[in-house]
Length: 340
Ligand SMILES: Cc1cc2nc3c(=O)[nH]c(=O)nc-3n(C[C@H](O)[C@H](O)[C@H](O)COP(=O)(O)OP(=O)(O)OC[C@H]3O[C@@H](n4cnc5c(N)ncnc54)[C@H](O)[C@@H]3O)c2cc1C
Image 1 (cartoon, rainbow, N blue to C red):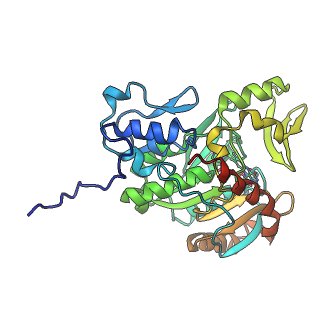
Image 2 (image 1 turned 90 degrees about the horizontal axis):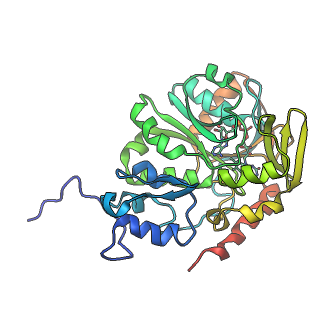
């Protein structure tokens, strides 16, 4: 009788028989322009999936792909089950941190730091930026590191969070917190489903509301052409249909619709505005200016918010889910762009 090996794993069927698994990923996801650039594949690829010219690629894959199937097991778009709506939540509230400043109410930062102070996790991955607004990933291990002002706030540029998550789960002793856009959140859930180490060690998953994100080369060129001086840029925001770049000596403002020409193909097929698979989803829309809107989905976050309340670290207020309807529907309509 055949003994099942403990190393044996179930991989999705190859759509292209006799081809390498990466060739399957390339044909089904990358070449069909539905890749979200979440880099879940790169997080587990033992060969060399990486970013080339802002796009997911695997140079010399014909020789270097080990045909292990890890990339197709974790890719949220290989067997794409588009999600949408508000999703399940236990509480829908607004918050504003008294300790930190951020994009809105800095509740993302507050939740992650509080989780560290409670000992639930010992590190969080934050997306920071360099002086040219290229994204950089930081392992934040205590609140003193938050003195680096570039750690909070929104960067409208893809970030290589998930390859770094692999390093974080190797290094952590008590658990890791991650924050990301809906595509990153879905990637983490796939990693947790396929690889137990991610299930055991990723203890907090914060999702961001997201209409779209941009390739670094495209958005920086667009903004430079609009007169944005990156050496003076301190904040970027999308609010009330406008993209606003705030510099030390003024601002550049234009209709976000103008960015349609550089909207990544992977975002054009994304239907998930609220990151429905997260433990808590945080965004701007739905609450008063200066507050973060939170859809709290899991008990771990209820406990963290109790800790924040007990310590008086934040103000809380009402949030209105109906205010998300427009953007939820706007993204749901992108379902029609998914190739059959
Ligand atoms: C690309 C993008 C598009 C968004 N679109 C919308 C929208 O349409 N409507 C809306 O209401 N909200 C949107 N948000 C969320 C919003 O901009 C704020 O991030 C959210 O309100 C949290 O604010 P905060 O003050 O609590 O966060 P902060 O405490 O300032 O923390 C922000 C966190 O975001 C992380 N982060 C920043 N940039 C990225 C990135 N590129 N990828 C992954 N993580 C990142 C940082 O690591 C940090 O932990 C978007 C966010 C992003 C990244």
